[in-house]
Image 1 (spheres, rainbow, N blue to C red):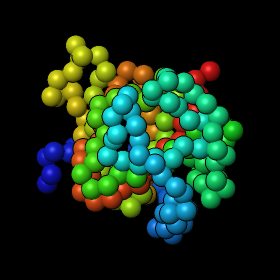
Image 2 (image 1 turned 180 degrees about the vertical axis):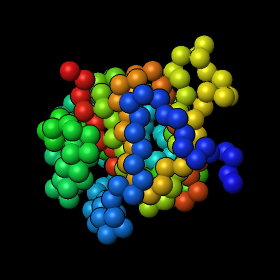
Image 3 (image 1 turned 45 degrees about the vertical axis):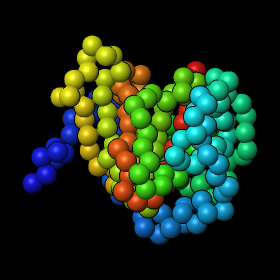
Image 4 (image 1 turned 120 degrees about the horizontal axis):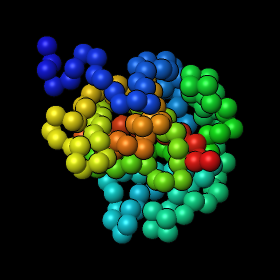
Length: 189
């Protein structure tokens, strides 16, 4: 038995994890669509991250701390947006951004909360698994025991809204092999 990951982790309010959210065939279709998208290095406050991205719908600039209208969301992702919207009872039109991210082997995401203009975050993991971590954002509440670590498997969906979005931060441990994610975000009202 793996003691690093509880069988049923207790997630913060507003966090939902759904393994096997899409099928293998749907994952293959999404991977094919991603190969047709030109990804670019993510620049974050003067630092080039070890991952590539492409934003559709709206695009957030970390350097300017601003949100601008970007490219239209490719139709190949419509079925995914519809399924996520149905799963969490959110109107399809509320998804304002679709972000594609490529994580090469060894890349990480450091502790953070998503950009302030966004509200609900939905992530779909593709091609490989990762170790996802959550911890309270308030430093006074942080301890080694307050970190929730668990595997996010390929084809799964996670949702962060409410308290899990505003009061918690997340990170991803170094991935062992190339991984893609599709992140959907709604805007704050």
